[in-house]
Structures are given as C-alpha cells and as structure tokens.
Length: 169
Image 1 (cartoon, rainbow, N blue to C red):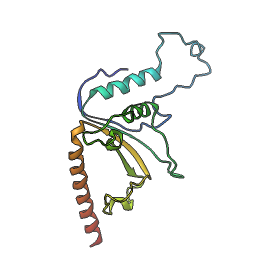
Image 2 (tube, rainbow, N blue to C red):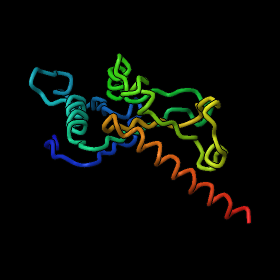
Image 3 (tube, helix red, strand yellow):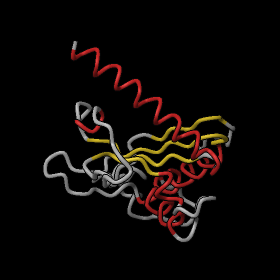
Image 4 (tube, rainbow, N blue to C red):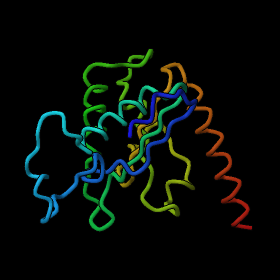
C-alpha cells in the first residue's frame, strides 16, 4: 500500500539489491486470473516503484540507500536494484557539487565487506586509491553538507584510532 508522503528528517532504505526490489511475484499454478492481466489491475512491481518515489519525496534532510555491491564469494561487482540504478544514472548524467566534483562520487560511500577490514584501522591519504571491496551506500542530502560529512568522517576516524589504541594496550 502507498505510505502517503509523510515528511521525515531521515529515510533509510536497506537491502536495495538487484532482484529483491522491486518485488516480483511468481505466478501460482492454480491462479487462472494471474495470466490474464488487464489494464488497471494492481501490480506489486508498480506499487514498489511508487513506494520508492514516495520514500525519495519524504526525505527532508537525508536519504540513505544501501545494497550489497560486491559478492562475498569472488568479490565481483553486484548491481543495485533497478530503481536505484535509474536514480544513480540520473545523478551521473551531469549533476555536480558546488566544487565541480561529480555528484554521484560525492554521495556514494563504499564500505569494506568485513567489519574487521584493515581499512577501518589505517590512516588513508589523499594519494591512496579508493578500495573497491565493499558494500555500497548512496547517501543524499543537501549539496552543501559535503564539509559536514568530511568532519563526520574525521570524527569517526578519531574514534576508530582510540578503539585500535585501546585494544593494543
């Protein structure tokens, strides 16, 4: 059912993996009316597309979308949901931040696949290339929050350093 576009400060959409959203409903063998689709009949897939749009419109400060971006078996890339892919394509088609950086790069964060990854405990420099062994997160908000995100990243790095130092002792 549609959720009515109620405004929320933060909206989190988790598990937006390909094949899982929008949901597909396999036809039942005994459903004789399922194969006779007519215009105006409800479609779970179309309802899910509408719910995704409502979730986008409901987010006022931040929209958080996550999906598994790499296979756990062979680390091969895995696509997001079709709807997230369409949103990413639209953002990549020329949208830029105020500094001129591509918007999709500024809004996408890649996390290591394992929580004990060395990347969480080492200091990265601006010269080091970004790692690609991870899940993907597309976060959105106002374009001017890039500085705030950088400050949050530095704060999180300080916290991780404290945790790593306390475990060493």
